[in-house]
Length: 277
Image (tube, rainbow, N blue to C red):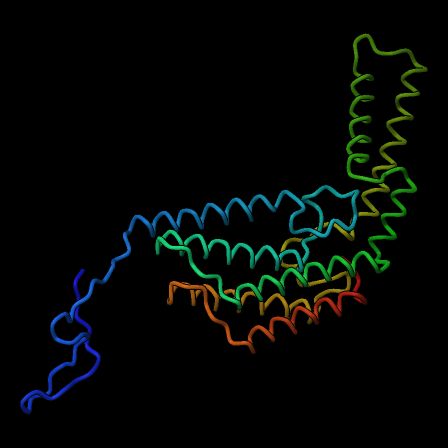
């Protein structure tokens, strides 16, 4: 699309006229209009990646602490550090591919984007290191369940399966003799008591939902978690607005990056004395 761009005004024979781009002989240039098809493809890609990555994570331990191996993956509490890593990876990756599709060129990843991914990776790694070093209530519950013979979630499913198998044997036709019935009944009772003790031990460590897991520990809401959580969303919004307006990876002010780093460092530092949910 040929267009003319005015860069100011100039006087010609006493009349003020626009001063256009060029030297007067070739004062037009081509404005490339981004095809709607590219924008649509980029939008579909972003939706597919976000849906696959985040919906799939609800039923896995990608974003979860896995501090109590006896819990099912869907019951593990969400990790703020891992969530931050996934948040910035999704944001930067989808922005990179979407810009590539829209502009039909390889976009440049800004130093600020790399710094954000580095900060989030350091936060996630630091949180995992702290969880590994400290003796939390989850560690005590883990030792208690191991003493009961439940070391992993596979052990829990095995006990549940054994109960179902014995109940099926009791319902066979003809029924087993009285001594076998008594033996099967005692086996079922023992395993049911074991599962009851299991439920009592895991109750404080089962996920209460994404938002509550990220912003609380066993004592309730914590300031350092809320601070890291809110600033992540704020900088994420600034990042997306920059990509949309400039069609390029945004250039953050170093003060914003320092703010993100301080917030993440505060989360990792305060994580050591906190109670682990």
